[in-house]
Amino acid sequence: MAGVLSIVRKALPSAVFAIAIGTFLAFLAPYETGALGWPAVWFYWTGLIAFGVVCGGLASRIVAPFATDWPEWLPYLAVSVLVSIPIAGAVISLQTLLGTMPPVSVWPTVYLFVWVISAAVSAISYFVDRSREAGAETPSVGRALLDKLPVRLKSAEIWALESEDHYLRVHTSSGDALILMRLVDAIAAVEGLEGMQTHRSWWVARVAIEDAAASGGRATLTLKDKTQAPVSRSFYPALREAGWL
Image 1 (cartoon, rainbow, N blue to C red):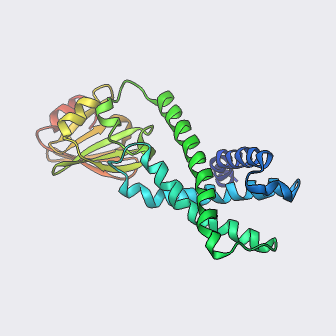
Image 2 (image 1 turned 135 degrees about the horizontal axis):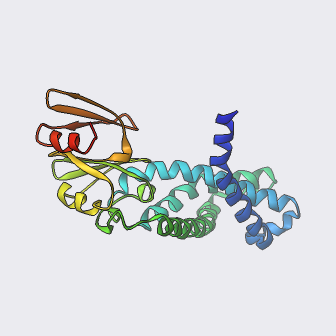
């Protein structure tokens, strides 16, 4: 039962969003959909938006790996372009079922009309996400680091920083991302968090630690996501004095 309730809680915001936008579009009845009448026009637009939300989630997963260094607004634009393909296909299929299949020459126009609405929905999502980030953002994490994180991680807890050559892997409560930044600069950006450098290539937040194992002047910290963060001999005494080990 708890698992079902958790799924419902996660799905509820998307469902409310789909119903709200679908109802708004049903009242506007763009592209002559008013001819369907009520409640058909409501089911038409709410169903399309709900389908778009599902496709948008999949499109976001496709875009995310490529969007690490993109401007914040660009992934939303990319998702709107990508998600319009299956939605346009759904519109064409619905029109066919209603007995008026658009000719192939009109399909690009259908896609354009769908993209206009997808772009508007993506713009709304962008501003909503920005508003949430502004409310969740605290001065404990500097802009130098936050600005480099992908949108999906900006409001997550920073759990660890791991240097990988010239790049930095940022471990968070919502996953990890590889960004171009020096470890020393990232550590300066998280000075407001309770954390310590554990190795020349690692910094760990105390809140992220699930377990610690020490042996022979070295140690390993297990984070909540099961990531193993090493503690070298040079940093071991400081962590032990702080009560981490």
